[in-house]
Image 1 (cartoon, rainbow, N blue to C red):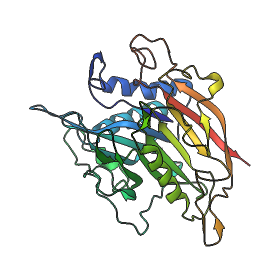
Image 2 (image 1 turned 180 degrees about the vertical axis):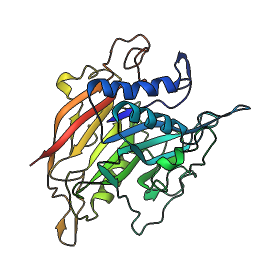
Image 3 (image 1 turned 120 degrees about the horizontal axis):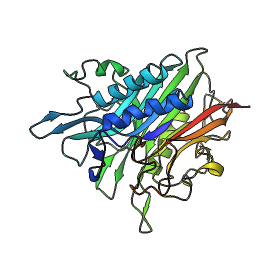
Image 4 (image 1 turned 135 degrees about the horizontal axis):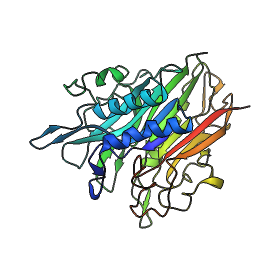
Length: 340
């Protein structure tokens, strides 16, 4: 499942015209999944609030409190113990707000086996300075009185790989993608997963953002390394802020265009895509004589959904009516299995 969760502020994106408490929205996510019988193994989230400080009023939420609220709600609703593989976040333009992306996973079915290799690991509380592909720690978590157990939900330092690029429209180095590797608890077989929140590549006919190229660099770097078993090709999920035409060697697996009411609408920007049998976006080469693009399986979608049910004519400008919305986006869900 992928969802741009629209932070943990009293309103959507700081817009006072569309107000709704984030705790109320988050409670709807678990309830909505329970209603339709979905229990995702992986949840890719964008616009995740790591913490928010208010002038003269302390923090709300505290470090990782928003994720704790979400995870507890999911546990109560669908019975899954989710953990946080990573939460990659930096200070935003909103005063006191630290926000980014996160991946949650079902710890009963998956193990997080992300490793740094021989590369230096970037600290998680610093603005990135060096361009390129690196492992990075999650934003550091300090236990608080309101969320004393939140930090324990993070896997260690919350290691993830990312690709730092220079974003020309805001004139700073940043990252908009994250990679983690999982193994199935049942048999140990592995796969790679990428979470993205890409900003538009083309503005007024000119390329202003290297986020798409940075993602391709990240996939090429990760997929070029050998690993013991390759169950699935790389899976990329998130908010693309546009289509997926910039990734010709990937195949869209969700949403299903034939039944997607958001297609052709500005809100239809969230996708799950997967590399084809021929491999990553460009040739990653070989390692130790093994063709790293020869994945054991392709992926097929056996079930897809968009939740809550979208309303393309909603007057509030959200994906779904305000009284049922989880966010200003809807979640895209897909059930996949190998297609040999």
